[in-house]
Figure: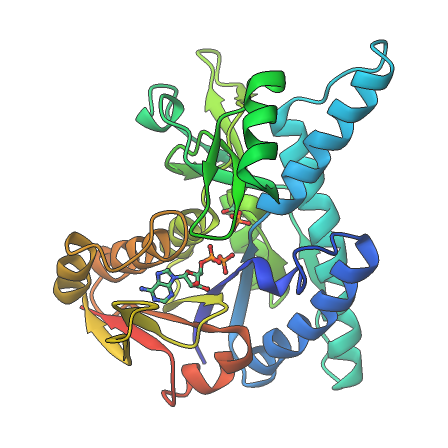
Length: 316
Ligand SMILES: Nc1ncnc2c1ncn2[C@@H]1O[C@H](COP(=O)(O)OP(=O)(O)O)[C@@H](O)[C@H]1O
Ligand SMILES: NC(=O)OP(=O)(O)O
C-alpha cells in the first residue's frame, strides 16, 4: 500500500474540449472515477488533484459576457472563479467516485476541499503570463480579443490560441493539516484543484486572493511532498513521455532518472505548458526525498503503471 497523489489532466474532466457542458464533464468524471477507484481498490491511499484551465476560463468569460450585456452586473475576480471551479469539479468527482465505490462495495467517504495555495507576491510569474485558460480560438479571433478585451493570448502547443494568465509557483498549502487529517483517517480527498486558489500572505497573517492560475502538476508536487506521499502519479493523455515527441524519430520512455530528465529538459524535448511542468514536478518530487517515485502515464493505464507494467517512471 502506498500513499499516492494523483494529478488529473484535462482529459480526465472533459473528454471533448468542444463540449464544455456540465453533463459532459459529469460523464467524463464517471469514466475517470473507474481508474481512480482501481487504485483505491488496490489498497492505496489516494489524494486527488486536478486541473481547471478550461473551467476557470469558462467561468470568467461567463461573468464578462453578462457584464458586457448589462454593466450593472459585477465582474467576478479570478481567485473567486478559481474557487468556483474547485467546487464545480470537486462536486462532480465526489459524486462519480462515491458511485463507483458503492458499485464495488468499498466503504469510503470522499471530500473535496476548497484549497488555498500561498504564492510569493514577487513571483516572476506575475510579470510573464504563461498559463492557458478557457477555450481555444483561431488566430483571427485571438487578435480580436487582444484588441477588444486586452487579454494576453498565446498559441497553445499547436492546438489553437488561448488566453494566458500569470502562474506563480506554489509555496504552501493553507489547508495542509485538514487534508492530512482526512487522508490519515482513511478518506479520499480532492485537493489543490486547479493548482489551488492562489493567495498571498498579508502582514496581519490574513490571506488575499490574487489573479493567477497555479499549475496543477506543480501544486500536486507540493502537496505530495507535504503529505510525505510515496508516489506522485500524473495522469494525462499519453501513456509515456517521449523524446522527439511527434517527430518521425519519436522514442517513448519507460523510465528516466532525474539526471536524464534534466538533460532532456535542457535539450527541449518537453513542450512548455504541457509536458514540461509534468516532468519538472516529477523531478522536484523525486529529488525531495530518497526513495520517492513519480509516474507519468494516461488515465487508462494508471493501474498498470502502478504495478510497473507501463508509463514513464522517474526515479532518483
Ligand atoms: N515529450 C513529450 N512526450 C509526450 N507528450 C508530450 C511531449 N511534449 C508535449 N506533449 C504533449 O503534452 C500533452 C499533455 O499535456 P496537457 O494536455 O497540457 O496536460 P493535461 O493532461 O494536464 O491537461 C500530451 O497529450 C502531448 O500532446
Ligand atoms: N490549473 C491547471 O494547471 O489547469 P490545467 O491542468 O487545466 O491547465
